[in-house]
Image (cartoon, rainbow, N blue to C red; front, side, top):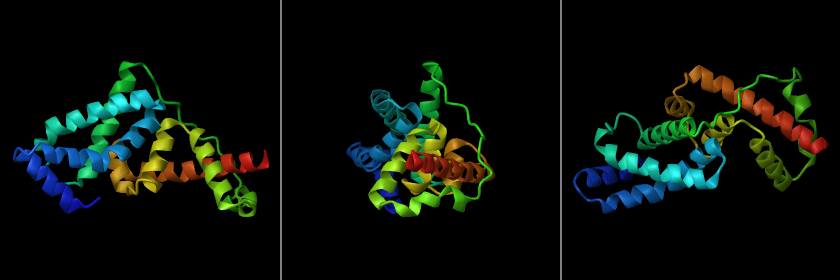
Length: 184
């Protein structure tokens, strides 16, 4: 997203031009929805929470200090709002498990070279669905939403080192799951 365009729209909203907020929503709604959906795994709940997120963003836009990127600030609100909703509904994340094989990455990815790109994408999508919601969110933010490790750290309130470790473990999990899918 264009940072200067975001700042311009934010200034317009702060100055009273409420219609400028619709541009912010249209720019970010898909990414916010995907972040929420990765956590709740239910489209209707994700849509409800997304509406709540944008209401919170609108109400607290004056508190955005422009010290970080707007997208990071927005994702942080989306992440925290979703966690709050999950707690209210007593929906919990799957626990993270560190059950990884000791195989080298090359061994894990043996069969991947033999399949087409379309099949790889299909296997990847299936493997992502097998991850915990938090892992799916982190890998999605990093690869599909182009969030940096630092931004993910800010959004999830985890250390940079923790995010790096999780990304490494998630990649290994994905490789193992994809390999299982190929062999099966």
